[in-house]
Image (cartoon, rainbow, N blue to C red; front, side):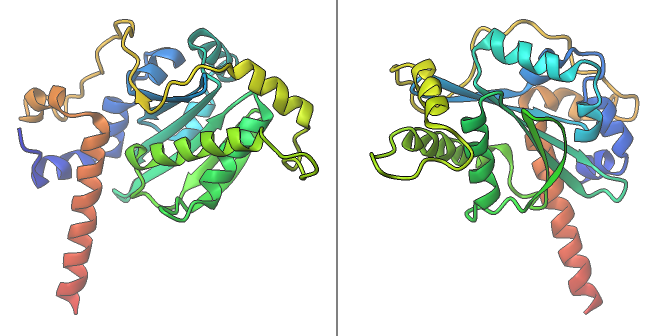
Length: 252
């Protein structure tokens, strides 16, 4: 089914309905993270990337969140977790935010550094106050950078992380990270090589995404299973930008 401008406008016109549809309020933290997740890995080090359809501030305020994130990473052998939140504000503008959770200092510093310094594409990240030393949150100024475009940056970060663990004798070490700590993390990572991107295959059955009366009985009811929520947001964002450009040209 084709996603039309009418469908996107209907969704974007009510941010509260989007939150109801996309935020999965009754799910546990693990279920929310696993609902729309991908993983990348290198030399046994695994990074999970989850799309979450709600305001990052609301997500960070979930009771027992840090303990849940620790348990989630330990249960699935993830060394780091990147959560990308997506929602529309009251002005129907797409908002993207990022949170990087990683108990390993060297890996966290490397991932955050690569994301902050990236120019192709530039995420235009603005650091937000941290609620925990192992978690760094950002407001993402460039809303055109989706999770698909974020994946190569995370792969670059893993490469940079392993390059930093092979510092030649006499060369300076990574700022703020001791060589002993880096060596321990390298030992933990192991020698296995699992390149590229993978999707977890044995995922537990999750409760269905909550429906909303504002979109019941619309053509999207049959179309949603064929689209990921992120694709819908991308289409809405593109249409919104197109309409804004058209309006600007008309005024001229």
